[in-house]
Image 1 (cartoon, helix red, strand yellow):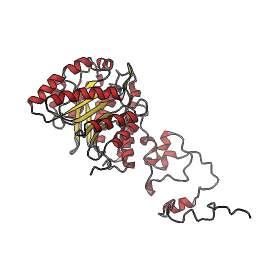
Image 2 (tube, rainbow, N blue to C red):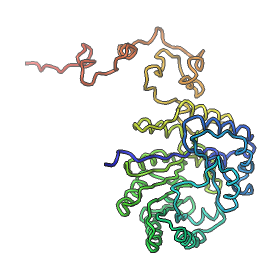
Image 3 (cartoon, rainbow, N blue to C red):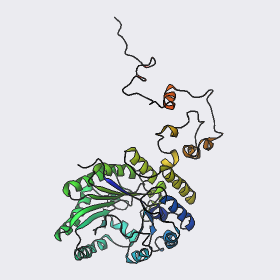
Length: 399
């Protein structure tokens, strides 16, 4: 029987998606320090950067130095982006520790639904992308591939040409599926991408739902989501809910939620789902992550010092939900007004030392007493507080 949720394969992208939109002059040593810190959080897959032309992405000009200086942690999968054979050859010099193959590991057909974006981003057209399909298929057949993938990017819509319907996306996927069918290779993976942050929970629910209904043999799903319009995290949640325990769902995000592409028109506002917020959501759903949230928060703070501003994450500012007694906030803390003061969730009372304290006497509450004594604040099936004198009772009608 399928489990409640799919297997989630999460990739941390701050060293690539994040850094490619930041200042190219961030010191290599600072990037190495962040990469090493990320390695200690429990994250299982981390992208170290891109092997691309510095003409188009100057922030990646010193990727070789970063790979040579960082300290790989056993058990962590390190990958890098390479858009062409030249980039792949550069990356291969560092394998290991790098793993060159990414994603589902099967040959795949892939196309941008927005021709304008791909021309701006990679100096190629949608037509050129599709022109490569026959060669990809021919190579797969020659190598005896038993499985393949299909997918689109700019799946949900484009800042340059507008919305893309679910029907349009399904048409692209159907056409790709037909090509694999014609050579007898089974399609087992599907990917959607969102470089311009048009993602929406309803759309991904519909796309993945229709894929599962149309092609039940597909169990490997990928969703690369951006967050300019605040929809990345809810869309990831909808993707999780649309799948089940027989499926694998590949998702990506960045510590602090930074990231973006200079070619999409949103700049740094493009952002991604913050890794710390995503892991916090998974834990709230009862999904084991193996990730230390406190260490992730420290990475987010380290990042903010590097870039000189606050990032887009939320858990790094307010802290995880204090679910254990020792994590609960002090009921007699003074006013907490600034983001720096709010860091008391990790730094302790020194973060709000000297702040305004307006109460004439300490805050007390019978609920607080119960919690401090190890009791639940409420007894849903017990007497507290339902049978206490202060709890309103039904009125007896006057005769």
